[in-house]
Image (cartoon, rainbow, N blue to C red; front, side):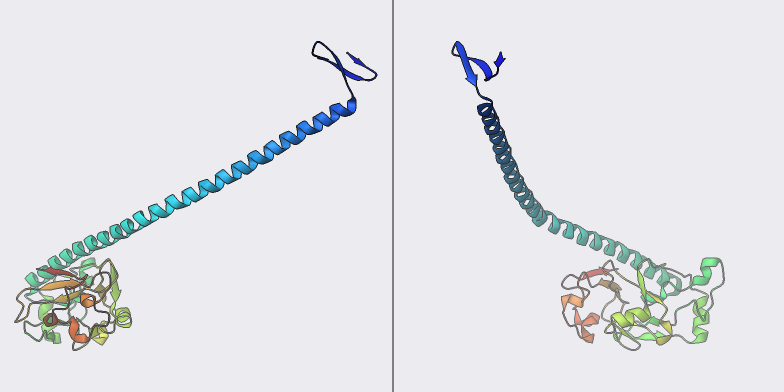
Length: 258
């Protein structure tokens, strides 16, 4: 029951008068207590979130230290597998061209013969190689005359290799001038062959091919591996690319004899 002096409430079996001012003060104290509680709870939540973030960052860092090297190794392993597969295919193609012509040719020659793609006839001036490897210790490239190319055209069954990963000789000359020469080098190319394609390994580096020689009775292919250098050398000399130097095949190089 409420009278003019304020509110009445039961207290210890009796009645106690509560003034309006005292009631409002109690309400304010209660509101302040609730506000302080919410503020304290909010601070606790923010501190907990920060701890969570530190924990997550730590876990991610640990996973990165473990997973990233594994992923890199997986990528490298896949490139090694792809390169070995392609080297095996190139070896088969080289042997096929040899079976047809009794000659070993340069890698850029193996995609010659575009006329056969459309059912045409081999043109000895455009569709057959301009040279082949001689079977000597000097690894000489023998240039073919026009009559010799006409004879070769009767045996040539190219294109033997439609390269999927290749670069024009002109671009390769700009990128790897140390590897291309008209007279001496791991890649022999004449000036008129600038538009010819040369096959690349999975790292985008040119393969190196050696036909049989006096001292080496079997052909061999080399990929210079991830670093793109013979035997892992940082600054190889021209002689380091020669088979007799026995630099190729060392380090991260891949050797494919056949």
